[in-house]
Image (cartoon, rainbow over all chains, first blue to last red; front, top):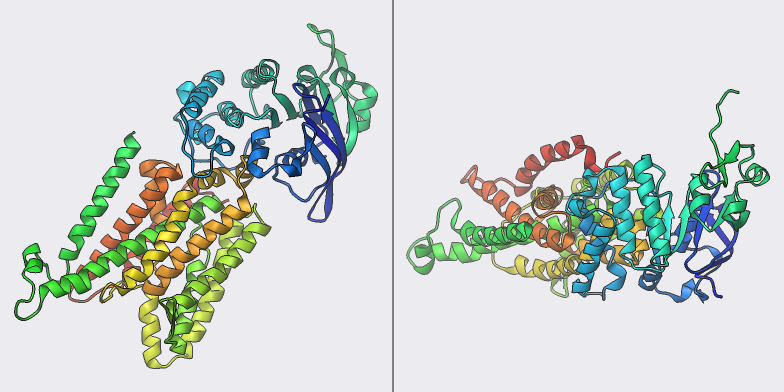
Length: 262
Length: 330
């Protein structure tokens, strides 16, 4: 079967420095991939190559077997949606405005919003539980609400592939869980292929089918999620050993925090 | 819905200002005077049609153009203080026009006279510098960008001073008077000169309202939604060059209108450029027309340069923006 997303020997240099040296991976349609690795390994840059922000990379990226260079900018945006890393400047827009403007790739150049667009916006607001906050400026929302707004906006692109950059990093446990269950529904019920950069190895492994680990711009691990939490694998990626235990509910291996002094 | 009502209110206010402003001045003119043309002594109708009406139209058009230019820069650079004025595009146009005044160029091309052509050229050149910065350092939206603007402004101001210094007394007076910003015109020539530039630049802003919204959130965000950021920026910068270059050529560098009005417009109708662009046009026009009204009545029969009024309003406004946290200056 042709993968929804395939990357072969991707290489990216920024300002003369190699950011990505050799990235190869394939994501089957409808599956979920977690991208992990140490800070500065190139995870965010990898996502930015996929959604057209970084240009000038070498190698091959294909969507459903078609070279990504064959798509125009709008067409690519109809195939890959993107939730950027939280933080940065707060935009002056309301939740509704952010969602509506993300319909951009579906509009003809001078076209107007269609009735179906408004229905979609209502639907997205309901699914993310943002209905009551729809007309509030993003700047007045909490980090968790803002992240949901950005997720809803990316979903407005109606793309079969969804990229997320650390969607739960700055969230409290409750909001993090809500985002995780939203993503699971989007993946399982709508069949959206998800590629998610994460630093939370436990949830990455628990929620994903496969894990791709980057280290200094190259592949350090690519395989089934359940094989990732392993002494040797983690040691090779992060350069130290970690404390692993069995999850009380799933029985799978999880990383547990260790006391700094033992 | 409320915002559409506000926009409609702005439109009505703009129309009222346009209709009423020509009657106010050093000497009040009544509608009856205008109708009773060809009387003895001073012909009020002539003052009305040859001086007042063109002046009000010019002020409105110039204010609308500067306001749109500011709105576009604030969106593209995601910085409340970024305007063609603060980033040196007005100075570029001013240098062009000053050079042309100094050289006493009296040619015209495509109906544009020497100072206009040179001002447009100067605006385009300094816009190329800004564009180069934006393309090379898309992350430069805060202090770096404004400091670059300060540097460009300093350099161009020195060059203007240099040109000014080498001028003779008559040229010098022309240059100085023009640098203060002026709206006193005779006849509709200047208005007809600005109108096509305003239409082209204004169309760019109105048609690209979606792209402006997405760019305001962030350039990378816009690209991920399918916006061709490079092409969009080029189109918007060309439009802004026409808007600002034209105004500077005709009226001189009038500051701060481009910075203040988009902010007030945003408070009134929100940040969506579908409403913000028309609101900026209307509000910019209203503001400069009223400033000019003050300029020509405050010390009547003497007249203040309108640039002095806008700067007196704008300076404190600039400081107020700096003290706000959301100003995008870090």
